[in-house]
Image (cartoon, one colour):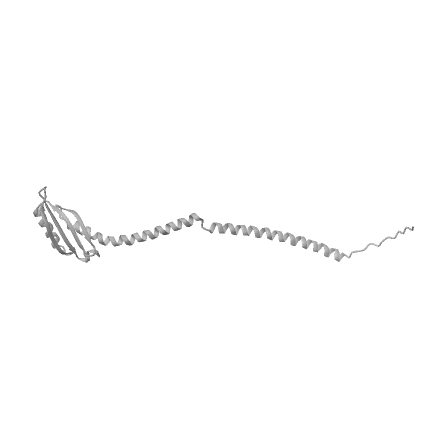
Amino acid sequence: MAIEIITKPKIKIPKGIIILLVFGVLALLIAVAVYFYINILSNDLKNQIAEKEGNLAKTDEERNLEEYVNSQQARISNFASLLSAHKKEFNVFMAIEALTHPNVQFLSFNFSIESYEVLLAGKAKSFLVLGQQIAILQKETAIKNLDFSGMSINSEGGVNFNLKITLDTAIFQ
């Protein structure tokens, strides 16, 4: 057996390939680092967007409150239209109050909006006061017709009576 000592010649790698290999590995490391950086940044932006959308989205409580406010607003507008219609009918009370003699008291009041008739039952302190009350009502231009009936003397010495008044439609405007 022969021992041969042969020295193998060293393979020389050209410097250009070494430089290219170093730059390639560095570029690969930089690309991997940039990939992870962009991935982390993207996740942070997604979290921020979800948080902002969560702030913008209405909670159930806010939605329920909004529905309640809208229903109350509808009820208020309905009430306002109803109230405006009753203001015209309220003019009847103001007119009767303004035309009532101080010594006359009305005990019952019935009003028919369809026929514009007011049925009143009342009492006066005396026949003179009753005559003055009828004169006041006859002078009023808003009264179309006045029917007087059911006159009687009460236990206190006053006069009980019934009136049927037909009103002009102008009082309701």
